[in-house]
Image 1 (tube, rainbow, N blue to C red):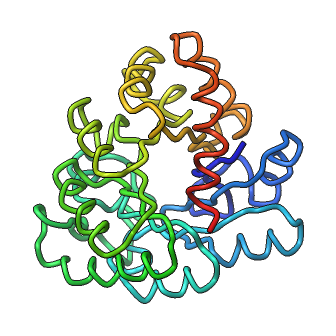
Image 2 (cartoon, one colour):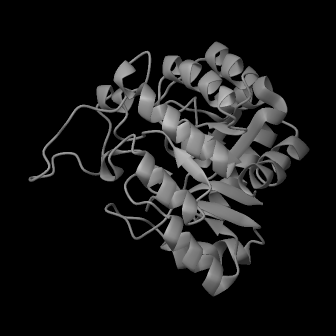
Length: 275
């Protein structure tokens, strides 16, 4: 098993496990790797230390939120040089996330205040040049582009741009989650552009209004383009391996093939991340 999306500490919000504790849980469960994600803290150096100290294939990532300057090619270049394997488009600071009034780690900071969210065409055309540079960096490192909390329209612009610049590895970040809240038609059309489609255990266990049946419908619609992750780490969530196991069992109960689900939580994410 390989968890492409897990939130660990240290972080500016409470996390159930730190990097070391998460890796211990993965090792005990027989996992073959994971990707540390933070909305605010680049994790490339942290993951490199974990690999050196434990031998476990933990990989870092960078999320293009305000804490790294948004669409900042320099931040991407540094993290890729440190061995990070995933570049997430904005999440908590995406325009769509802001419009939904959802929680953000830096919201209301007494010194930093608040600023508009980050968008790409067609939401914000001024970011196009920086996005081009970022896509070239991702392509050069053969790293993974994850769409974060961008809207369906933004993803429809981004994916062809990424392909033209040589990006081979793309993940549509939990498209059926509250953000970006994509419908079945958008998900299938974006998958057809070459993106893997993520479903997370967090959606099953914590997303308001979500059911195993709705997630199963997404899984069936995209077939072998499916990627499963835990998106765990919140204090109320089970440990990541347990959360992902619960997701798989719930989808099997809804009639999704267990073999497909096992691949979506193991060989597919591993091959996506590992160069």
